[in-house]
Structure formats: C-alpha cells, structure tokens
Image 1: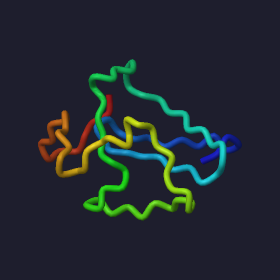
Image 2 (image 1 turned 90 degrees about the vertical axis):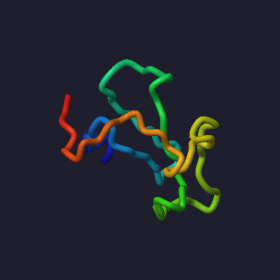
Image 3 (image 1 turned 30 degrees about the vertical axis):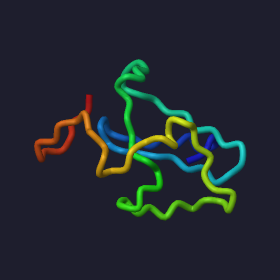
Length: 91
C-alpha cells in the first residue's frame, strides 16, 4: 500500500488489527464505521507473547502511545463483541 497506488485494506468490524510502518515519518490514515467514541474502544497489547507476532521492528523498538502501552493481553481482554460461530457481516 502506498500513496502512489492508492490501495486500501478492509478490516471488518470487530476484527483485531494493528499497524507497523517500516519507513520514517510514515502516516497511516483509516476510515471507521462511526464517529469516534473513546468509551467504546479497546485493544490488546501489541507484543502479547500469547499471540506471537514477530514484528519487523528497528533496533530502537516500537513507538507507542501511552494508551497502547497500557492495553491488556489477550487472556485479559474483555471483548464487547458477541460471536455466535457465524462470519461477521458488513454494515
């Protein structure tokens, strides 16, 4: 994905996601399904060993917000989404 090619990635509602940029001064722009509601947001810590993602980070490490640094691990995450075994549908 780049500014030049205009490609986008759809992340369905309720699907966990994260971003890592590999170039300095990168910007990530994203669309959401509703207005921002901080009381409705949640997340999982990026480096939870239970998930086991091998992030391709520089030796200086990840740059995170205080909010992202304080997120729980997967085992402690209290999901607001109910899952009935059927694929999620779009809005």
